[in-house]
Amino acid sequence: DSGVTQTPKHLITATGQRVTLRCSPRSGDLSVYWYQQSLDQGLQFLIQYYNGEERAKGNILERFSAQQFPDLHSELNLSSLELGDSALYFCASSGTAGYGYTFGSGTRLTVV
Amino acid sequence: QKEVEQDPGPLSVPEGAIVSLNCTYSNSAFQYFMWYRQYSRKGPELLMYTYSSGNKEDGRFTAQVDKSSKYISLFIRDSQPSDSATYLCAMSAGNNNDMRFGAGTRLTVKP
Image (cartoon, rainbow over all chains, first blue to last red; front, side):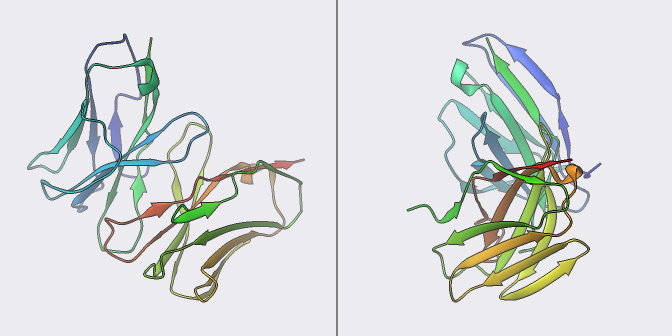
């Protein structure tokens, strides 16, 4: 157990639908990062939050949004889902700068 | 040109071989260098962490950083089938909001 908790582990939904992925960071970590990993693709950075505030934005589609709550858990909202959104979505958290990220086990999203 | 380049492989070696995994990068501001291991359908786990140039050894694993050449390596000695995974290099300048990952190299160690 890495200390980063992601739910649900698996999600199957239809095109056009909206889903919410949840992440609880490791205790004490203020930063949360969301990544997308498609089949045979590398990790694509989506967005970072630090202590409730958006800190950095990567290749995140306008149909996607995220937030970090006062208790530091984060949610990634994916709407108007398309087949191409099927992927593994990872959440990671970090504490002290430069010491790397701790990843959760991911949410596997399948859009049918 | 990508900021971090990593040969995606796949790389297949016999058990007991020495494995060399490499990444190059273009941003001279990077100071923290990491290697993550990702088993199939699992989250990446931090394997090695190095600050600035030099070598770091941990058991069968050795990480090398050559900042002058903007080149990092991970060596695995006496490779085992359990080492079969995708290895991702990652690096940052230190702010933790600028971490860049390589595409990952898929390694298979055959018994």
